[in-house]
Image (cartoon, rainbow, N blue to C red; front, side, top):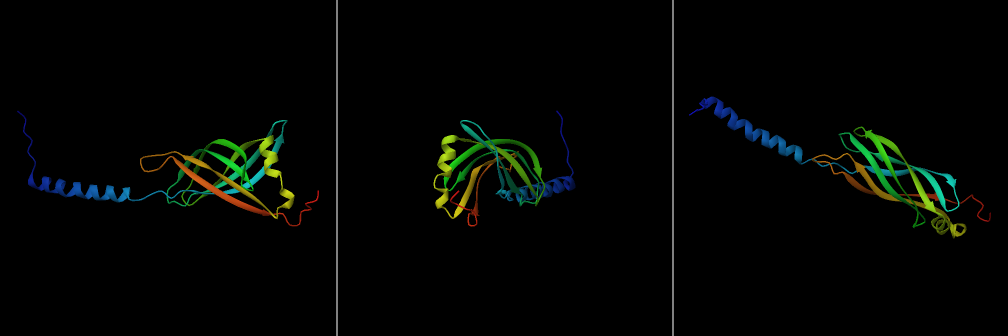
Length: 165
């Protein structure tokens, strides 16, 4: 039979080291990742087909954390004056540094029905309201959620534009 002898001094060191490691590990668990902030940065019409319109938008993603985050993709809907206008997904492979920002391009698709529904009544409006909502997909880990829902809104004043045309 094999017996292991441990000196009392070594046992004391191990006895003090284990609780210290547990405390340090638990302190790291208390930190949570702040959700990234997202703003609509740009909207461009790409092309219009018989039954579909293609748009390109850019979303600015802000990382307000002290660690980098890696974006894998996102899915979103674009609203125009409160009505769903277009939808799309984007596969992304970008790392946003701690306290950094990046833009993420997304191609959106809108049916002709959604297009007309979005532009009906624009001549009566004083402001054009854009809304974008969806989910940002991150490379997750033990403490990092893999999906964050988001919503951002922007307004564009239509004053100065000739609404009769």
